[in-house]
Image 1: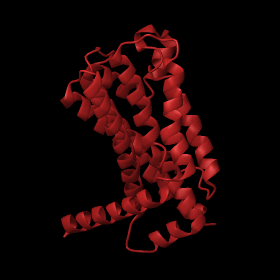
Image 2: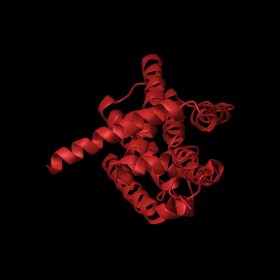
Image 3: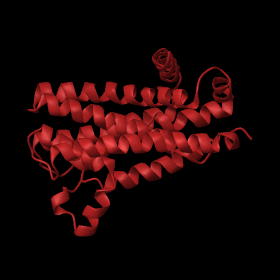
Length: 251
């Protein structure tokens, strides 16, 4: 009976994800932060540099995965709270965990779609890659950053999307610049390395470098374990905060 209930909740979460995909994928903030921003960031990084194709691929894909998989999630709960659809969802036989897992799936699928399009083009044209390591790193990275959106959308408990987007942008930019994308970890000062250990993006970038044969700073297995650790931390932490502030969201 319990297994049937879990399957039922998973089906409902996927239905929520489909609803989110239809409504939110073409929203202005999602297009800007999920598609346009990583393109301009990569262009700014590329100008004046002469890097190997593999390193350029790591930089482009890292920013793409990070920004696409974190573009959708923070906007969903505030918009739905404002339009009262979030309250109606919770009045049905659906738990808050199911709703949030559906929102996480929407973020995951958006990131997966864009990332695979870029990856397949790059691999076909100029990048040699270990496919198994790459796929594991990609899936773990998408899960990690999609779960981060659950935590980012949990507080403040507001129905104003701009409030959540402003806080999430602060978090994302902070993680971006301490992650070793622009400066390899081996070249960072000691305090920079210590800060980088706190960013899940650090381990994703490092795992991509292993996948393209550039060699990473950490063990590849440590990268995978840390991505999984951050995924569980963000997911269960986000669910706990959402439950704690749920009543305040509807006042």
